[in-house]
Image (cartoon, rainbow, N blue to C red; front, side, top):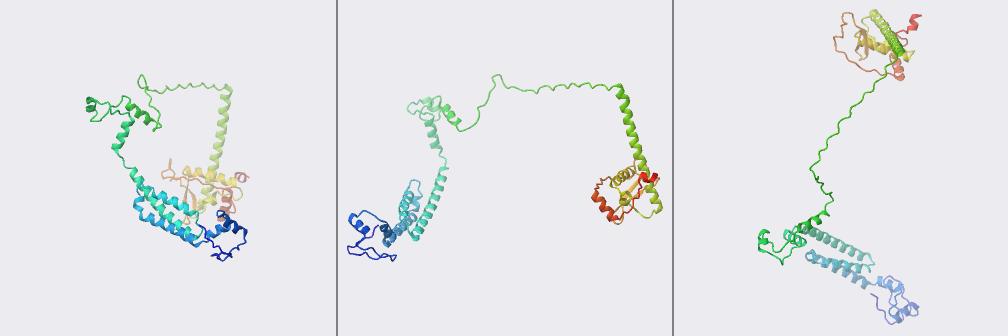
Length: 351
C-alpha cells in the first residue's frame, strides 16, 4: 500500500527521519508521470508506512480471533476453514517487515498447529471405528452381487440377501487377499505324505596295522625299559636321600619346626630348588613326610614316624600346586635370609 503524495514541491518527511526528495528528482518524476513504476524508495516507504503496518497487524488479530471463535466448526472433518486461514496467513506474511508482525504470525501458527493436531487425533479416532454394514456392502459389490437377478430359493438359502452372487465370487476375494500376504503356497503330495528315513550308518572298516618287524620288537622294548628303569631308580634314590636329610635335621632338634622354604630352596641354583620341590612332593604323597602351618601361618615340614605310616595313608590328604619363578625365588631368599642350602647337591656330597 503506497502512501499518497501531495502536489507540492516537497514530500512530507518520512517516519525514520530521512529527508524527502525534491521535485526535481528524476525517480520521483517518473513515478508521478507513469503511476505504475515502483522504485526501491517506494518499497522503503511501504515498509515504514504506519498505516500499512497497522493494517497487517489488524488482519493477523482478526485471523487469530476467527480461529479461536470458530474452533468447534473447524474441528469438523468436512470443514476446510483452517486451510483457508493458513493460506490467508501466507499472503500476509509476504508483507511482514517488523518484529510485532512476526510475533503475531508466530502466535497464529501456534493456534493453528494446536487446532490441526486436535483435528488429526479426532480423524484417527473416527477412522478406527469399524462399520460392519458398510464393509459387508463393499464386499458384496466387489464379489459381483447382482441385485436384479434374484430367486426365492436363493434368497432363503442366503438368509435374506437381495441379489445373486456368481459362482466365482469367493475366488475373487481369495485372489484379492493373496496380494496382502507374502506367503508361499502350500505343497501337497499326490501320493500322500513322504516319510523320510535317515540313511543307515556306514560301517567303519578298520585298517589292519602293520606288525612291527622282529628287530624293532627286540630293540625298542629293551630301550624303553632301560630308560624308564634308570629314571625311576634315580628318582627313588633322590627321594630317599632328601628323606635322610629331613630326618637328620628333625632329630637334631625335634622341638624346632623346619621351615619348608628353608628346606627346599637352594640360594645358589634355581633349577635345583625346583628339583627339591619336585622330589619332596613324593615324600608328602607317600606319607613319609607331613606339612603343617606354624604360629605365623608359614608352611613347615617334618618326617612321619614309622609307626604312623600306614598303607595308603589313614589321614585325609590335601593336594596343592606350588608355582615358583625366579622372581619369587629371589624374594623368598631375601625374606627368609637363606644363605646356604639344607639339601646338598649329589656332586658335592660324593666329593
